[in-house]
Image (cartoon, rainbow, N blue to C red; front, side, top):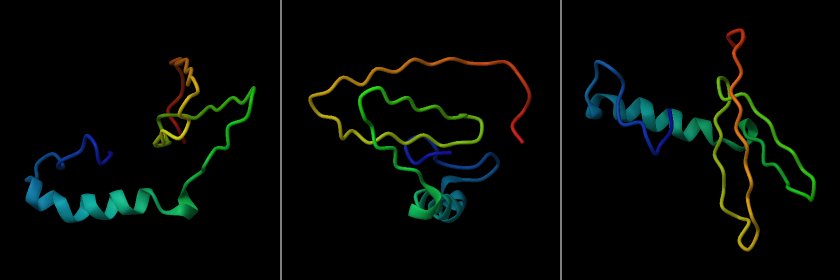
Length: 78
């Protein structure tokens, strides 16, 4: 669920979904629920996409952002 790609819930219209989606979108960016990573030379960040929402901010103008993605098979998140 994210503001860029989610328009409605299955079985609901966009109009029916809008109030709950707006609440969830606002809730997901509350400062006390977020982590703002401060990049430094040699930094490495890892997260579990099964239980974490990644929302990159383009604040690295003039620098290269290099990312490598891996997918692991394993247990479901707890």
